[in-house]
Image (cartoon, rainbow, N blue to C red):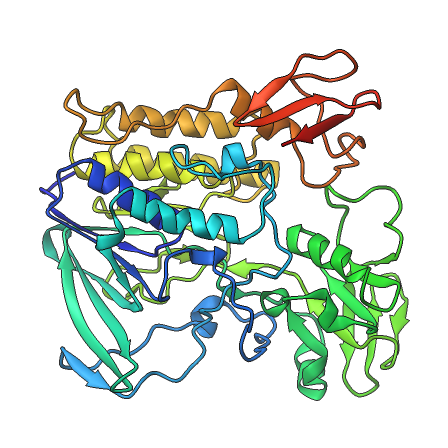
Length: 501
């Protein structure tokens, strides 16, 4: 680190922002810590909005910089102006029946576990995040209802943040600037929906606007009662939505998939019919054509739900002033990153929550490593710029070879533990006097839960109750294993496991 850091800004008050605030405060080094959150409460993507608002279907194939562009700030600040009136994608994608899909013992903060588990409804993580701010004494660091509209690099590795806050009494937006020595991105990546470009889709949506929704605005299966539904996608949300619709929609529920997911068996579940990818939409006739030559006529389907994920978006990042963009949309990854956390071009910038790995636990490792580095107390020095760039180039090469995404860190291959060890090593331990948080221990029972407990069966790996092969009790007469108050015992069926509260 090239300069003394005494002030740090955090963008976002979800799980990663909560971890960042706690780690920064624990260092007892920084004079100013501010956590900016555009919603009126902490919780991030776990906040449930019963009314998703206007069901805006994003233009197919359009990328986040066009869907969620940077706002133009007033020329002279501070200023008070009429409120902005455009889509900002603030509502979350949480639906009514959503539950976590990672065992609670591994997903919750290490020092603030969920009250029960292993898989909990969405309001538990939200409450846990809010409680975490209170328990860590960081709730006084929050600037709620405050949107970061611009981040511009200043000389000497400092940063200027342009901020906007709506005043409901005056019905005005108040704009102003604040400067910081460092800042941490913790704004998540489940805000801006993505719909892929398919021939004829844009014209079809324009012709039949009420026929399409993105899963971001899906809330309940009962909204589709008696309707004939086509679900596009079979990842986590696609699987959840499809299974929920079986009890409400007109059967079968059609699911379009490019390939088999980990939850798919050899045959579709009862009430579901699989279709290949959509090859073309014909707005004039209303037909939907699939890659295998089959098709649906206009009256065969009442609604199409796109469960095709989200795009990373950093609308506040001033690419012109900051020597380029932060995200590579062609390759789907951050630009200039090291360990998915640090930036070799910007020593006073960090990011938490980008890797697809073990949330919330990974946030803690990233947050503690960043806080320790900003306090200049990291145990292991980061490589120089060339060394960090070499890591990025090598990872990009390996990901291309293995055909996986740059920020995906799978547990099964041992990469997650290797990643956590790297962050743990950089952070090191707190001081004898108690300055700083200690990186959490990933003990045997936690690792066992990660490897053995599954929300859904994964037929490709093991078809018994969604439990994977791995260490731990399996079969008749196995010993009990206590996982944070949950007892895992042998079930009656061979190789089955049962989780009891």
